[in-house]
Image (tube, rainbow, N blue to C red):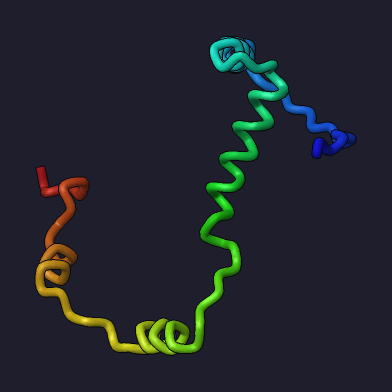
Length: 93
């Protein structure tokens, strides 16, 4: 079933960006509108994927809550790493 598209989205872009979209759409065998819409929706779904609801049965929920409430475990290598100066920090040179 195809839904009628009734909403419009306008955007401003550079000539270079428009050229890139035209070339990519042509390579994909799509119109620029189809290409941009499909690409934007795909990216939106990726962005929202970890923000969607998920369900757990009672046993898995208890395990999840226990993991959240458990004290953080010590990781000596991570502690040592956090004490070391970053390679991006000025080393007095």
